Length: 270
Image (cartoon, rainbow, N blue to C red; front, side, top):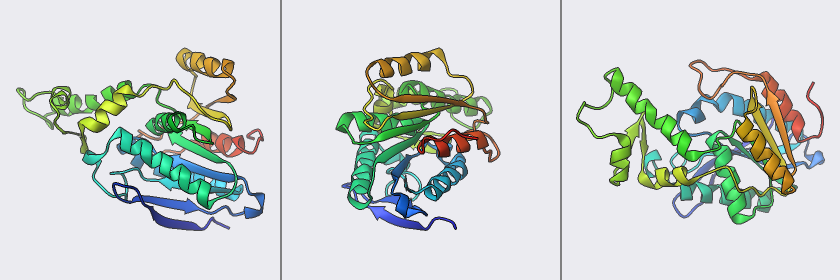
């Protein structure tokens, strides 16, 4: 039996945030609530199918799964060009607060790509009572932003963006202007916050499950070792699969789905 899906608006000081909640199919298990914080810009759209499959699998295991559209994203109030990093952090805090008020059991923040970095920063800043489930986490907001801004240069090469004399996005952002990249408007308030965000501080009383597609880099290994030495329960999972958040066609990563569905029940994936 598929999970019952409820849609609602989460009130915030800057407008509503659109949320969908999959109610646990086996409520008697009372596992808790998983809150999804999505990837950035077009990666959010590319990953919707994978996220929906994972959410349904957890609901079948007895979890409530809340999917949050941050301000200016998806069906939430506001435009992408009005979004700020601080505003997105507040959205995560409010979603966590909602889950604690309306659902029983522990709360996990499930972040994909930049969403994982956002979840980590929100949890650390407000000392949220949560666990962290990270899919292909972005370790540096600045690096992620630079990669995104390169899309403007690529479009310029093929004649789809900017004249030769036009200032670069970096120059316009530094001047306090909003810029458009690949159909998304970026405001300085979002850019400044992203540039400062680093995957360093960690607060996860219920532990961390970090999933990476492919090999785990030495940088990530050192970071995980640092967290473990500080007493944080971190489980690192390296699985195989395509980078579904950026592929041209919709792709699935079955091994990631299986391992993720198993992680929070303490069972090994088949």
